[in-house]
Amino acid sequence: MRQKEYDVPPIALGSSNDFSFSPDEKEIAFTMNESKFLATSTNNDIFILDLEVLKDGQQINYKKISTSLGNDCQPVYSPNGRYIAFTSMERAGFEADKKRLMLYNRTAGITTDISAAFDLSASEIIWSADAKSIYFIAANKIYNSIYKVDIESQKLKTVIENVVASSLKLSPYGDKLYFKNQKSTLPEEIFSINVDGTKLTQITYVNSELLSKIEMNDVETFWAEGAQSAQVQSILVKPPFFDPSKKYPLMFLIHGGPQGHWEDDFHYRWNLQMFAAKGYVVVATNPRGSFGYGQKFTDEISGDWGGKAYTDLMNSYDYALNNYSFIDKQNTFAAGASYGGYMINWIEGHTDRFNALICHAGVFNIESMYGTTEELWFPEWENQGTPWENRELYQKWSPHMFVKNFKTPMLVIHGANDFRVPFSQAMELFTSLQRVGVKSKLLYFPDEYHFITKPQNAKLWWNSIYEWLDENKK
View 1 (cartoon, rainbow, N blue to C red):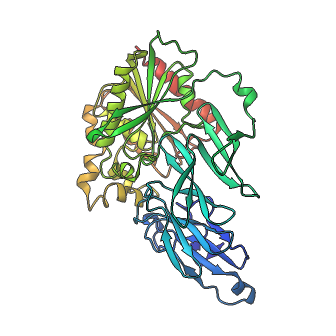
View 2: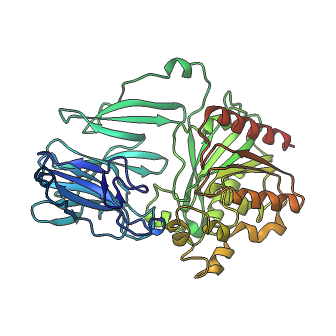
View 3: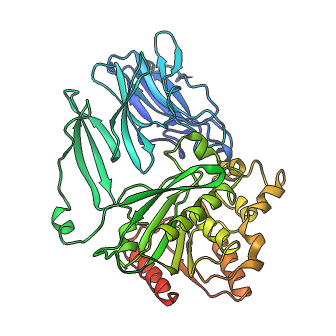
């Protein structure tokens, strides 16, 4: 659908369900961004359109029902047609604000936030069959749990916690929920659960035969004290055929975003088990900026990229070394992508704890990246303005300002078609490493983007990382 010069669904920050029809099929609700300069706007809004007008050939007039300056999306009609539920971010320019669960009364024209009492960010919202409650998925520590909220009392109930759920659907009879679930030892399969949270059942077993031939250990977690005494959670994965009497090198992983989180999932690219399979203990920490620990915890990365998050990470790293005797302290490595790559570059200039580092699609020069990224709202929010408005902050947290401290060998990886963190960042980084005499390699993918998606490229990616680790072990 296209309205004048605006795209429906919007080109960025929407959901997987950005238009829906009313039960009587006489109206459609949709998401659209009317901003004139999309690169600086997160202001998606919800609109409704009377479809009867289209039949009569009258002029199209749509009505906006959302009011926030942030990202509103995912409109869903209640089965009885009384309400439209949607998610809404309050703050303009912030792509990781709390996704509030809003309820628009179609008769009264009144919108209510029914998620004000709980600190969760709702996604994949679906209605119960009786239109009295809404089910949704939200990040919850290392899980993406399923919840239910009563629309009248606004009382929240956890349907199931220890899953990494997606693609949530309600059965035709309204008695079961179907969803995809995964864990680090299980690629996505389809599961069901009764709406009251009982009888979790795996339905598909697509990968069972293959998985029966692979040795993997389930994730464990530990908590360490981060900056300002915050409790910070980390995932720990032991290598296959683990022997507690032996010593194993450590792979320390840093997630991107920075607003994101390590989950108990089967990731195509940053697969925890693929690192563990080569004999590494894997630690993946969720520092400041991570989802699933409350909005305040998520917010505290913005404007402070190398601050509290760095302390959270290094404290968690030190905790692992001091509390797990099977980790070889002489052989530790760190890797990350996007913001995780930024943190690798920050680590390069601030500590020599690691044998070697791996930076994939990482931010190196925050100021120069501003003029080349396709999402200007992102650096403007994270650095509290443009470079000419707040140059001090851009430089304060930029790794390129600390090249004189670089010592640790680094593998730099980047795709030519990365428009989020453009390839120029890798060139600046690699040139700086070479110029100051730090052992370094550049792996360049001329046909990849912010992510490595093609199978043969992924194979080269993994093998290059394994080789880099091997040649830098003591």
